[in-house]
View 1 (tube, helix red, strand yellow):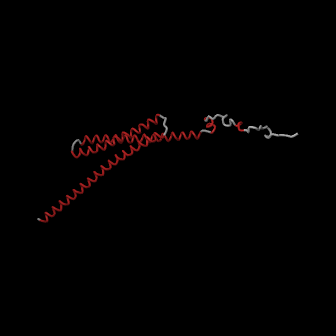
View 2 (cartoon, rainbow, N blue to C red):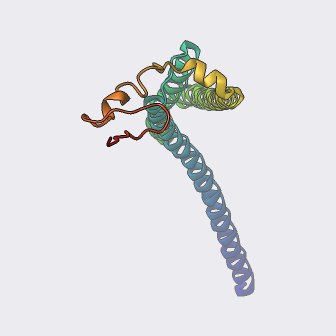
View 3 (spheres, rainbow, N blue to C red):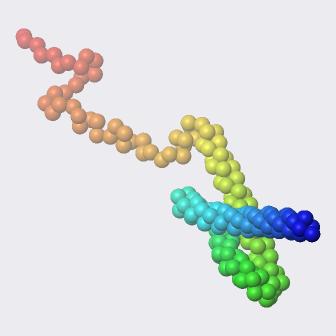
Length: 195
């Protein structure tokens, strides 16, 4: 009988150990999944805020007169701004979802809200990124074409476009001659002779 109880207690111990291992494994998987999702949200938040700063800096340093490019700047900044706001709200909704899971209330409603906000956050981030890339490509092409136009201009075209008054360059040069002397056209020196 004692052997039978020993065998049962060993089986129970082994089962408890297996259950503990499965629980630890499942807990590690859940923890890893949550951390990965949070890191993804943190990365999007960091990149969005950085993109807003970069776009504002670019907008202030480059003289932009083209309305289309100004609209692209505005769209990119707004996309990243709304992405930032929604990402911060996603962090709040994550806490609400965890609380509803712990309390076993409104799980599906909070989960649906969080999925919509996640989708909107991703759409705004990637649209802002696409607009920023399009904007940078347009600015590079515009700058390159301006440089090409400057290289193609010949020196005569540059002279023609520059307005320099012709008479002012040596004007007043006659005032440079000494006051008591006069010049002759042939030798330049005054001859004085004795008779």
